[in-house]
Image (tube, rainbow, N blue to C red; front, side):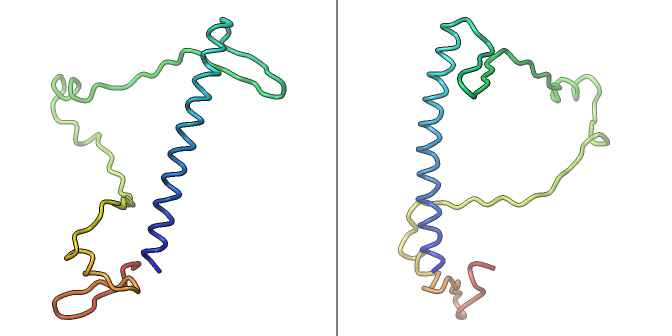
Length: 116
């Protein structure tokens, strides 16, 4: 059951990437039309469009550290979880580590459920 969910997840991610590539291509066409018209803002039917220069300023942490030294008292740490499935085929030995119900096998027997 867990393997089927992972397979479904992988397929949906692939479809989302394909849809995103298509959306990006259409956005590029729209931006090209705006550039050609010399417009940064347009109203087309019920849609308002904006395509203009933006500015973003960041701090050069490396240079700041070189100039001021230790910055650890100004560092803020945030903890979070990362879900990162890897879709490469497992070796036969690795794939035999999980049973049909998603339980991990250990040398001494069956371990915890994979979904926990």
